Amino acid sequence: MKVLLILYVLIVFVFSTNILAQSDSRLNVNVDVSTRLIQTIQLTTVSQLSFGQLRPGEVDVYVNPITDANAGYMIADGTPNSQFRLDYFEQVVLSNGNEDGNLTFFYEISKNNIEEQSTSTLIENNDEVQVFNNEGRFYFWVGGRLNLENASPGNYRGEFKIEIDYI
Image (cartoon, rainbow, N blue to C red):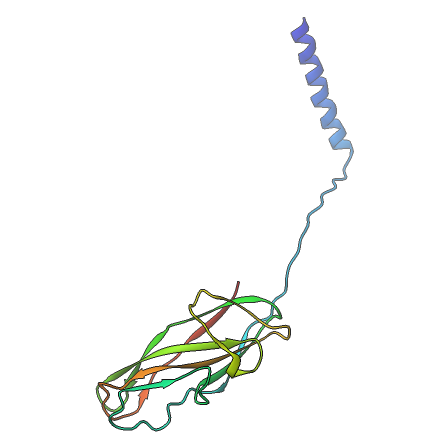
C-alpha cells in the first residue's frame, strides 16, 4: 500500500508539473553573448631591402636590420593593443634569371612599437607573441645575410612572404 501511495504521488506530481509547464507559455532564458570586432591587418612596405651594387669577390653580404639604412622597412596596421604572430621563412632561395645558379638569403627581422629602427630588437623566433601599440601600429625592419660564394653574374630574385595573424 505504501508503494502504491508513493507511486500515486509521483504520478500526480509529474502530471501537475506538465500542466503547470504547459499553462505558463513564457520561458525566460538568459544568454550572454560577447564579441570583439577586430580589423584586418594591413601591411605596408615603406622601403625595400637593398644590397646595393655587389662587388666581385665578395663572399658574404650582411644588412643589419637594427642599424643599416639599407634594411627593408615595413609597417603593420591592426587593432590597437591586440596580440599577433609573425610567420615567415627564415631563409629564401634567390634564383638567377639569366644563368644557372641560386643564392640563399637568411633573414633577420627587428621589431619596435615605435617608429625607431635604432631601438628595435631582433625577433628570435616565429612563435614570439607581438602586440600592436595603442595606435594599432607595429614597425619592423628586414635585413639578413647573403652568401655569394657560389654566385655567378646576373640578376637574382626571390620572394619574402610574411603572414601576420591575430592570436
